[in-house]
Image (tube, rainbow, N blue to C red):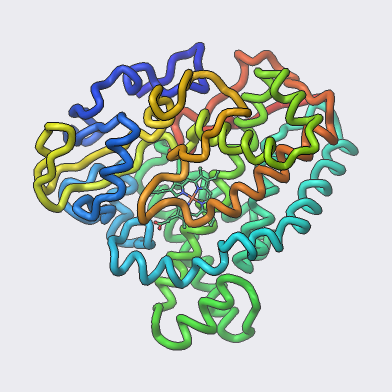
Length: 390
Ligand code: HEM
């Protein structure tokens, strides 16, 4: 569904106006349930009778390309417990708050370095290519143990994977090429062990037979794509939203209070809900949801962008307010699949939002707002580019 032209930060009006539980027709002609209510979404996402397994009949796939890739590429985001839990647990220690906090000084260094380069370069600059994309890309590469020098290769392919308009064959090819790239990297780490996330999966889980090479590579593809496409869009789109709310940007720029920065990050995550095409599940049993019978084998789409604009959960939901308590938002999903990388994403965004506007206090758009191109066609919402000057 399309967003209103004049409100690029708001979910599509049709989604906001939909009943809490209704039917919706999707690209393949099927009619899964659309759930827009915040509490109902949390209850479905927390209910093991709804499966995340995209291979199951009735699962509402986002595109034909995802449907085509579902047999071929399986990571734990589309598995159910106990298999999902077994895989996820192999990674959780990498994302524990203490581990992530230990990375903060390095992230600060990366952010400062990129701002130095931008300030020394030509004006206007494109905030997306010069800053928003390289920050999370460099960070996830260091964490995983993927050479950043290959970023043109994997960024081009992950961009294809998250664009709805990519033709099926191209998306399948992009996914296969990414997996092959990571399979080669796994082989290299088997020969020469490295102390990074993929290196540890190789020396622990692969060596003991807990995971196959293919499973390690599929996990790595998930983290590589999820780790930079999302945070990058939050930096680009979040900056644009703040430029449109200059008094809040000024407050964020001038504050010494890390709590206000952390609060602003949560509010921007809620307000923008960049993973905007809904969480997807399929019922494995008949389940009654708010008086409607969802039958076994029927798909459900949980519109978390609409959930995050729920009036009861967030008074005056359409207003951006960096002082609001928004941490109970569902921009990272909810339930067992809730984003594994959220401590990392939060820390990266806190460093970015507390540094960028302080280092470039006169940052402004270099084009009229109306000329900014939004990613209406991508699973992860954002801006294609953000020309800025100072
Ligand atoms: C602002 C940034 C981010 C947003 C908005 C975001 C959003 C989400 C959402 C909504 C889900 C739930 C999927 C579902 O329920 O089907 C998810 C899952 C996931 N995310 Fe993130 N994410 C972000 C950053 C990251 C980062 C930095 C990583 C780093 C590796 C990451 C890794 C993952 C993984 C592995 C999952 C699957 C978890 C599971 O199935 O158990 N994400 N993310």
